[in-house]
Amino acid sequence: MKNNEELRNWLDAFGLSHPLVIAGPCSAETEKQVLKIAHQLKDTDATVLRAGIWKPRTRPGNFEGVGALGLKWLQKAKEETGMFIATEVANAVHVDLALQHDVDVLWIGARSTVSPFIVQEIAEALRGTDKIILVKNPVNPDLSLWLGAVERLYTADIKNLGVIHRGFSTYEKTRYRNIPEWQLAVDLQNRFPDLPLILDPSHIAGRRDIIFDLCQTALDLNYDGLMVETHHNPDEAWSDAKQQITPERLRQIMKDLRIRKVMDDEAEFQNELNKLRTQIDVIDHQLIETLGKRMKVADGIGTLKKTKNVAVLQNKRWNEILGKMILEGEQNNLSEEFVLRLFKAIHQESIAHQERILNHR
Image 1 (tube, rainbow, N blue to C red):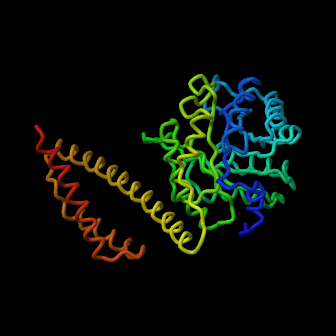
Image 2: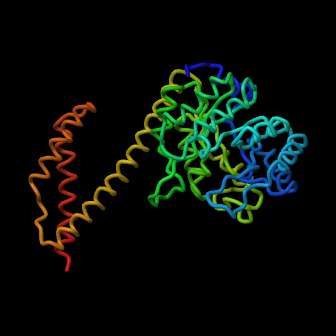
Image 3: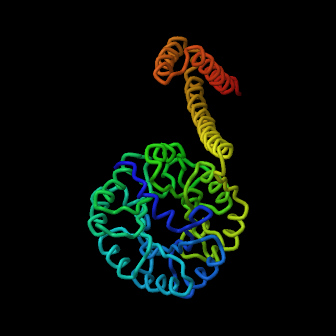
């Protein structure tokens, strides 16, 4: 897929003075619920009403959506409020029903993006459409798979394309439901700057208290919009209750967010500088997390050494690590001096961790 300014035209067509905001409940539950939320969102910066109609749940038995009936509710909300409407589609049947009900924005979910077969089926069903089609990142951090899904749609003569960053699954326990892996989205943004990028902070967070921070990071990284799960009574939501916020909270978040506008050369410089600094902040956070994981492994080694009464310092192993890291550092444009200083500090911290374990009685 080539860079193409047409990819951004649909975003400009909204004529907004702020980033695009897509908001609404995780799931359409009842007609009354959809209409109530829609009317409350009308007084916020939200331009597009979203609601899940078909909900692919991890395990059967949970609420899996009301199905096609919910499309009529979305259509009614559109008629009453004038908002655009959006929902997720996972196969050709979903696409056909969504188009019949004049859904303006269709998105492909993370579970569907992982399958080229599913994406191709959807692309064929959408061929030539002028609807806006958004592709969520796959559940695993694979940039090629994400871009491949976009390319299949682009090849089907679908011009109004964009992507949604909703985070990536992990077995590890973190503060997020899905780890953001910001650098992967930044890499996509750098390679295809004309492809609109929207953040889904709800699925990254998994909890409502860090929604604002995620939205601010996205804006600092020049994302084009936000998709925020919003419910008039989040605690009573039928799905993903913990990550949904109220329309009132969304309104306040949009007031508090710092949206940087390019006004002149100086402002452009500051905007780019803030973008780069935010990238550094994200990477620094990842570095600290990675170092913490490394020390946990060192603790495990210390515990194992203690059971066999083995010395902490293993010079042969240390020299092997140092040699490999110097070579890898050169390949990444890092000086030998810097790599030596860095890994000597890491090695010293590992030794300290292991000595505490060996000497603990």
